Length: 333
Image (cartoon, rainbow, N blue to C red; front, side):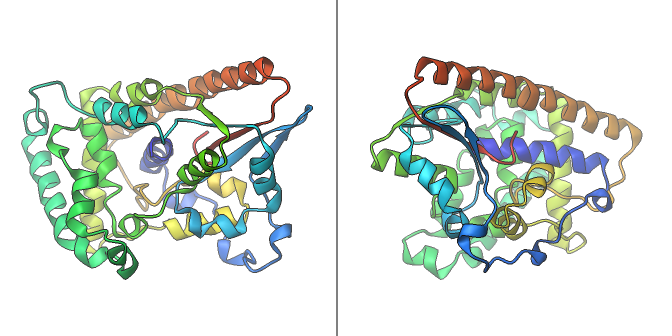
């Protein structure tokens, strides 16, 4: 999902210019996950009015991994609300189609035509490795549901030679063993959207596909090549065993289930985040990383929050007698 990709990019670039030893992660093992469900912290904020409305921070992992730890007050707010709004309407076929279209290179262009030869070859080699390994990454449960490696690889990486480099970079980071093992179960955001439809609630989106897509396509070519190269370097190091990812999906789930807001916001939204331990970059590359980070902070945090905030305010003013439930990514704002 796009919202987690935005958090991914921000964390990716931050890690390029900030050693991993500088992060101050709370040890999630200290969280008592078996404590009473009613005592758990919540990612729910109440907008005090009559009737009340709510903001809820979601997470981009299979809903089955977190649902039992979501406090009853959050579930009750969702059930009792009249209207549920998401960042994008991921149940709308047009949304999915538009997201797919915006990732493609101009008609007649292929990735081989635009990427430096060495990077293209490394990318192709890595995707061949992923395709070879994917059958061993699949779980028995996935196979039992009829989800097979070839189908899944094509669903994620099909038509990759027609994608813009920035989207290929994001794709590469979703083709990991940990991510593959989670496929086949709706992520929390999508599950809530499906539940809202099942409960016949009115639903909507506060963003347009173009608003999420165009900033990514707005990077210049040298910036995109830099980011893709760094991503491939990380994946190659992981394959060689010379790099270990310090933060995983499991860490994210533990922090979320513990209600650890600081860890969710200031660290990582997904295991797709490339992590570099004590990365040292030449000064020119540090400048590039900082420029991209600054660009995304402006486009995907400051401008985006202001735009979304205005729309939320307008919606509530237009429907003062309705209870809204706004489900936005906890790690993307």
